[in-house]
Amino acid sequence: MDLGLILEMFDHIFGHGNVQVITSCPGRINLIGEHIDYNGGHVLPMAIDYRIYLAVGENGSSFHRLFSDMDGNIRKIGVDEDASPGDWAGFVLGAMDVLGIKGKSGGLDLLYLTNIPIGAGLSSSAAISVVTLEALVALFDMHCTKEEIAFYAQRIEHEKIGVLCGIMDQFAVCISREGMALLIDTLSNQYKHIPLDLKEAGLGIIDSGIARRLKDSSYNTKRMECEEIKATLDAKGIIDRNTPLARLSNAQYERSGSILKESLGKRLRHIHTEEKRVMEFCDALSKGDVYAAGRLLNLSHKSLSGDYEVSTKELDFIVERAMESHHVFGARLIGAGFGGSVLILYRDGRWEDISSHILRGYHEYFDKEAKAYSIKSGYGSCVEFRA
Image (cartoon, rainbow, N blue to C red):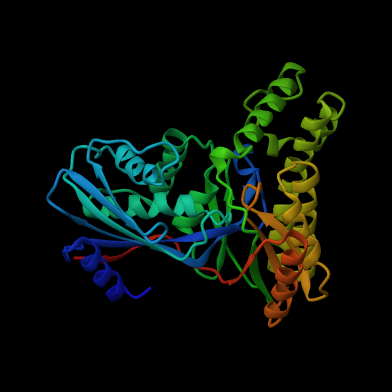
């Protein structure tokens, strides 16, 4: 996005040109490794070339003014006020709170501009948190590493929004590099940049148009089910209560099958097999084997739909419709599920035909409109401008 345009919009909306900092942050997709980031597993996200930008300047008053092209309205919030439940301003005020500056600074004008589809499972919430934290850290000359910013963003979700998310989204949007995927060990929080060499393949997203908000979905229920699994296996002496579910040995996993009730056994089966799929996917990338990568995406979706039960009839339809094309290597839901988007690995140069086929069938079957996006890798959050 052109920084000159951002400066002009700021002046037009707030009536002054005192922009002190501009920051940006990407959305993300998770190539594979879904619902195991909070179970101590490995995940493989990447930043995408859709971003949110934030311009910030002090306004000399006792209230903050927020404008976003997401709703097109100027919001005035006192420097000591809290956001209403469900209000996206909670991410903004949450950032001030976790950094310890809420109520201690004067009023700020904040202009948010984004092309990240909201509710599509592309981590727009983590992007809002991180782009705000980056701006505040720069504005007030604070010293934070990228990792610290990611953990602050996770605290916002946990403490201010009420979503018990893992660390994957925040790490991905903070730390990713262009042309790379990010392999994260969520048990140790160590990470490694993996070259994203897709050879003759491209990546696309089909947004189902069913916006998901994690706080209103069954996401936290899945978290509680995982805790129930650990408590059950601990009581039977199979694991210690602190053992991450993604790190069970094959022997421990096999012993668990006869102990857990059916629904919990299915959840554990997804976690155990998805962890293996992440490592196999990395191996496929290293070999440039898009056929193997596609097969793993298909298996991941089958597991998310059947075992973890976070898919919807719309997402399943998109995957099935995509796989009707011999130019599609694989497809799966991304994000937490319950709506959002499907990731498609396709033969380069065929996206228009593939996406048109899916969108047409989706409209005919559901009488709903989906949207298609061709995506590329992006770079992590950063400061774009300082006065």
